[in-house]
Length: 368
Image 1 (cartoon, rainbow, N blue to C red):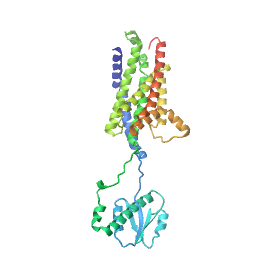
Image 2 (cartoon, helix red, strand yellow):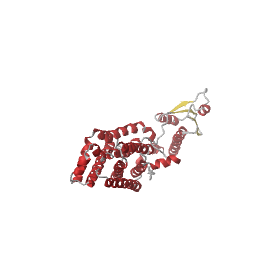
Image 3 (cartoon, rainbow, N blue to C red):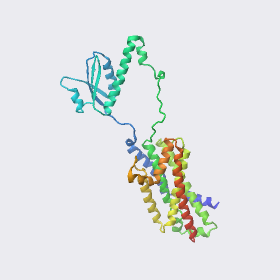
């Protein structure tokens, strides 16, 4: 019962502190919004293409190509008829136009430069030629079926494409919802580093020792209260990111929260362990701040790190945020639940080491 009372007192103290509410709730939400909105263009798989400008010459005496031009204009492909003053091939070669099309009674010829614009033109004209050839054959055999063949509904398609391994990737808001959440968990080590130290600073440590409460109960109650406070804050951050930013947390949210819980245990344990290892109250906060900043920078919390190599890869692999971000991303976008095992193992092992340091140090002290 003493443990629960101490834990409840710690939870109330944390949530009465406006700095805790701002740093653990408002700060990550604002950071998600800013980074997710400002860097949204760096996460798209699509390549923006400006309007295409094409020269053409039509000697086929047919209206079919004019119909194609009218349809292409709606897609941002602008056709300009060749005049005697223009050498179309040179204009394309100089890059002033994206392509040149010659339409003759014998067929169609396309001249383009290499690039995405040329591929777009080639694809559209190939589709046009195929459709024109089909229409010509239908006209020879059954002209009355031409319109129904060209306007056939998609539900009658004989071939349907389905991607077995869809290329799922997080968008900017999805990415920063994950990395900012895992980063803010590490900052929880700062508040936990003062759990015991604050009692010494306020001169209440002696009163606690004199009370009918064992030191083990005080220690467990402090740790439990910090774990609950940090967990509630992280759950609220996840909820806000889902509701307001529509961040994708996948179909295995329970497993994701479980992995985050092990990181919370690691962060709280690290804060308490460092508070016993150092002799001053300011030293743990300085160490934690430096550690979290380096872990965040090399763990991709501020910008996405793709395929690092050499010494930079070694450094990024040492960041605890790299482990957990990779695990959560694989669980969400690849349904790879086994990816959580390395992150959970490392977090719990690190937490155990720091807690052992704290317990051994506590036993050697006369008070707290």
